[in-house]
Image (cartoon, rainbow, N blue to C red; front, side, top):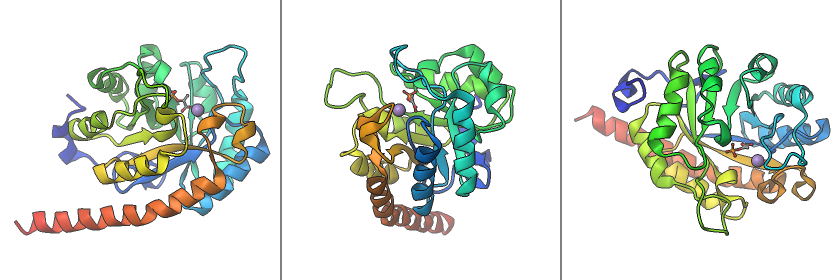
Length: 276
Ligand code: PEP
Ligand code: MN
């Protein structure tokens, strides 16, 4: 099977532009949805200044209610792409159907498949037939095996898949979903693909994101995704889980020593392995 760890030895890494996601620890950040030029530019500027290389922002929003903000569609993709380029970043955005691939391709560096579409097999099959990396979210009630098999659909024709745990449905009302760190540990063992953790959709809050980010660094995840917004109180989508930009910036700065420590420990471990 393409996905399992036997492949790891041959793994050259999933690349997004000049970034190899299988090396180091990466932060994907930005608002839930692109709302305006001012909003996305403000987010991109601050996040880029603090070292974020991949900007997120939804233009097609899968909302529970049809009366909620649905996203700016192509205008949103254009604003996202321009904000990313102006700040030396790459960008990721969700598409909900195969018909949107062609429309979104000129604007995005990575296609996101959302939790609600993890088993949209016609979408996955079409994404296998194009060349851009795909960030695949875990379905909200999907097992690890179902998640890996969904990734296999894309891997039939496209090596560049990024797995993203985003929490699963649970009985706990204090967090939006239940973050499955055991599942992340399993994904890291079972797959050669980069494993990211969406800390915003998994928790639905901002206060516990820094400690969970440290846990992700410690356990060897390849990165995290975090929602950040210049004005969360007036966000059109997911404001309660969006970090204000200054809070996100502070967290990113405070994570750096942990990221450096991991790099040092990994370098020591590989020197030791080499001398055995
Ligand atoms: C998102 O990242 O904007 C999103 C809708 O996430 P999920 O598909 O994980 O719910
Ligand atoms: Mn969101």
